[in-house]
Length: 315
Image (cartoon, rainbow, N blue to C red):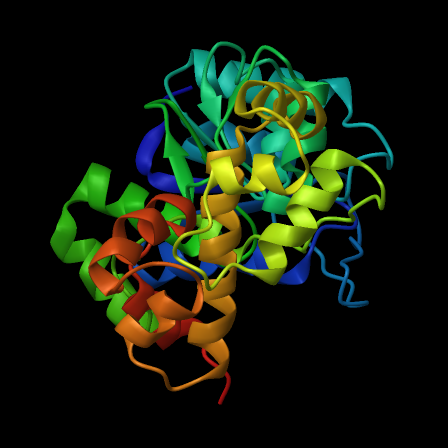
């Protein structure tokens, strides 16, 4: 069967999140594409919002789609994906369709084997479990979506908008993507990745353990610009070499990288809860000024401090 690039198939699973289900039909419907929305099985489908929906098309109708999208899915550990659905996705890919997994829809693509040897992403809360379940996939944790040509995956929830608008821009030009974004009142191309949304709680520190004591000392003195790895090692009476080795064994990270991450985490908190200027924010977490803070902040979070504040500061 011929597959039309302007026909978009949407495969909805039972128990999928309501927002993710709505993203692809809204974006491509706004752009004037033909939509073929099919359910995992006939009849009403449940959603996480407690609302039942009935898809207007059957699975066979997806065979005409040049783009097949799995917009979210039920959480891992639920009912398995039917082999017939996995086969249909493989066939769509083999016949030249672009296959897309939004949020937990990436799990379905991975189960079909479509992500083996490719880069992919999913919601940040599920990234460790996703990486463990599919070791043949190169999992990215700091992006809103991943374009591997014939296969596209996105991070959670609203990142599906970014992925769908990207597909419009890639395959049909920026003008159409911009018009769709304007109709949806969203940015045509959002900056940054999902790293800016990941929760990074202060770690649990064991009393009496040299590494834990060093971490505690660091968190109590982050604003001190002279605090460095040598001082942390000295504070717990270890040589720099021994401290570095034990820190890596305990945390999987170098002490310098961890220290910079904690300073950036402190900066995120200050940016979102105060009106301090960027230089003052930088000094509050141990950087000399905003110029010193910005490259580390952007590397860890994915966006500049000013952009982070505009998006996340308390109102």
